[in-house]
Image (cartoon, rainbow, N blue to C red):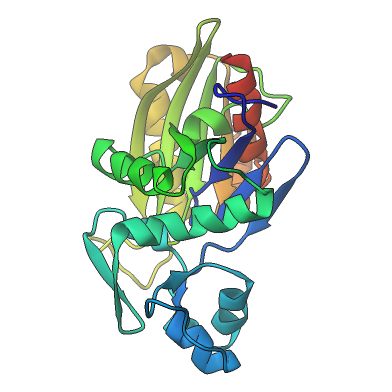
Length: 275
């Protein structure tokens, strides 16, 4: 598959606190965890690279994270609203935090300078965080564009055909629920709601996250009369996906768990269809 500039197209999914990558030939689930090189050097006895300490996302980080998770940052994308963040004593600019997991995905895919990269970002992101992500990825020497994950989730399963899709993206700290409309002209993100994993206004001893997600699904559907009465399916991803689908079954809502790699693979299809 070729991009607008004649290069390859790679899709990188950074939503749901994860990292998946898809190319024309294969796809994979990786870890977005980052750590300073100084931490990795202390663990394996290697030397610091020229220029001093920096952040890294790699198999070496995976090994350190399994033993010392406190020295790593498991969800760097969640810091997109910050200017800098301290990671194991190293003050890291946001651009480096955002670029590191994408760089790992591009290394896996064998991406070359000038290739096109479709980056899937959380659906609750606005212009500021999306612009920061684009700038960070552009610094890697590729041509990026961002898509909100809900739009791709709506097309992730070949069997999906309902006019309305409710995409449920569950990350480490919150779940984003998005209402997407399918028409012959394409996909439209109509509305969305954010459900925090722990609601400080409620009794934190009780885990009521999934019921609140189902309430958000119902509120979005009934906020649009056509969605409330028409053909609708719930497509769940991430940490709470299985529990959300179980709750949808009890509420008699058509629902499916979306495989981890499906949105990135779907982004490649949408990219090809748009050209």
